Amino acid sequence: MNLDNLTKEQKAELRRQLEAEDKAERARVQQERENYKAIVDSWVVFITIEQPKLIRNIRV
Image (tube, rainbow, N blue to C red; front, side, top):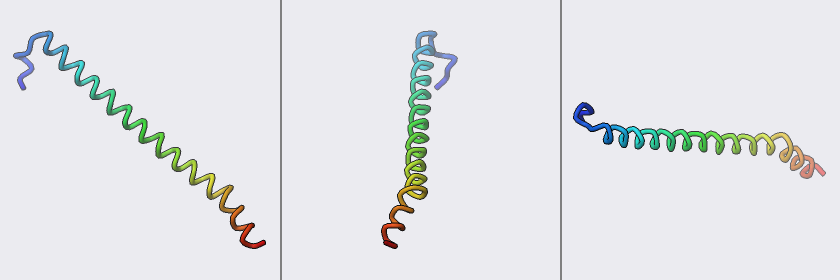
């Protein structure tokens, strides 16, 4: 695609499309980060709180 041959309107539309794709990608990456953080937080809670309770119950 030769950008020099596009009209101003076509360039503006292409820019809007690229910005929308970029925004969607940033949202996807942010959601992945939040999902990972939730998994790590759950694991930390299990290791620090739940697992010791389970071990105490097994010993009793």
